[in-house]
Image 1 (cartoon, rainbow, N blue to C red):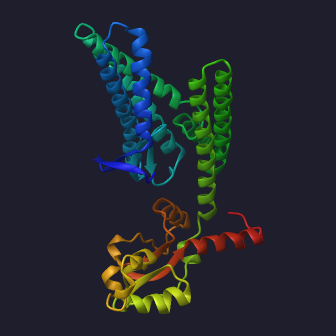
Image 2 (image 1 turned 120 degrees about the vertical axis):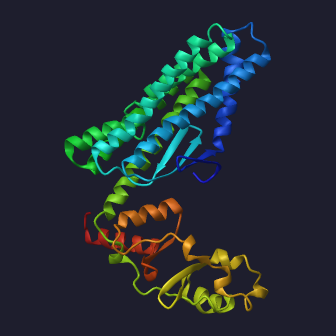
Image 3 (image 1 turned 180 degrees about the horizontal axis):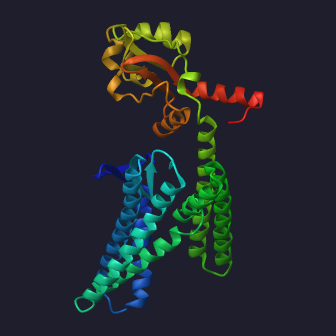
Length: 374
């Protein structure tokens, strides 16, 4: 989720808030202040209602953050790198960079999130008991958060992949069948069924007069349906490349340029004539950087004769690279996560090839024409 505001890092994991979170914050706050708190506590002042509602909204997303952070920390402990956590309109998502290696890892990582929500629920309930004789507003806030966290745990344990419950279900099927891809398909199918139940349930609520609630349930169902379909497709896509090495399909003789040539020379002799959008920059056989159309566009054309490639290129330290021995599924994941069109293939500091999206597409097309299966 690229459209997000970065808040910083916790335990090495980058925390961000997607812009859609602001919509939910406003909706939850307004719904509580103008609806629930107004009806249940008519003696409260308008200021009390809005302050408690805003505090509840903030604590809700703090609870979601704890839920996702628990997933992330356990995933890291189990050898699954986590790049970031993003809070968004439907809660939160941990960007775990690779799938679990075993059904047990999948089970543990999936179940700890709802477990943390249960612990938070009881913690808020205990705090509410202490606050009962101090402040009615504080008591109500803490009691509300206790209920919300228990509901969050229950909702996430619904067996609708990719919810936590769906991932627990996939882990169980994976353990029984010994086949992660098959388990993902089964869990995805069940997840689609759960999503349709949400959609039709929301539609029923609309016809019964609960328009806002029904629409919201339908949107959640639509989101779950898309997420289940996308998760299954992603796993199937990665499985098609598993066991194949990057070196088998990379371009072993990529076009390269020296950092000392001018941008004019680069554009006229390489970009235009060879239809290249990105060119690795080398000295000897050492990769020192990459020059792209975006880098060139930042320099006025009248300066192209005077500016060299080395002055505007992205240095080697800024580049995402891969080894020729790496599994192709790792390269596919890197290209997707970083939204890249190419990956330099290196051994040490030496450039040994280039892997591009076109390489992957051509590889898939040939396999499909030959009727080969992964």
